[in-house]
Amino acid sequence: MNVLAIDTSNQPLSIAILKDKELIATVTTNESKNHSVTLMPQIANLLNSVGMKPIDIDRFVVAKGPGSYTGLRIGVTTAKTFAFTLSKELVGVSSLAVLADAVNEEETIIIPLFDARRSNVFAGGYVKDGTGLTNVIPDQHVSLDELLEKIKNYKHIFLLEVTVISLKNRS
Image (tube, rainbow, N blue to C red; front, top):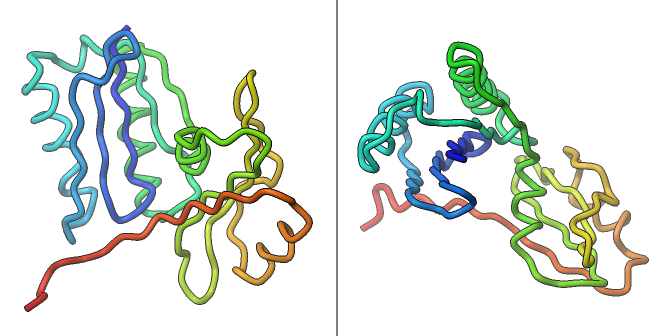
């Protein structure tokens, strides 16, 4: 099964192509350009780099947030348009769940978070066990103080902060 995954939920734009669960191509850009300008050319370039066309994709996977409202609209609309016009499967995934799933800590609450500005974060709480990932604190936009209050009674905590650093105009 060929999968095209799209994440426009934050400043970085990420696209990946998987074939039978194996990552075969990926690109992540952190350009200051709007995702609406860069997403389609990046998809076309990535597909071309592996000798594929949109019709070769069996499933479109898109980050459904939380994150930038405009970025999410661009990614979701693009994925929905591809899936609808090509009669292919469409799957939405939590941006935070994807981050949490990359952490191999059992019996620990995994808190992926990223900056939502003004002392707020997008965050959720996940627990991983032998059967998979369970969302125990819903994905949300929350003040950092409120998040810390929600997790204070957990014994083992793994905080996973995603930070975007711009190197533009640095001397």
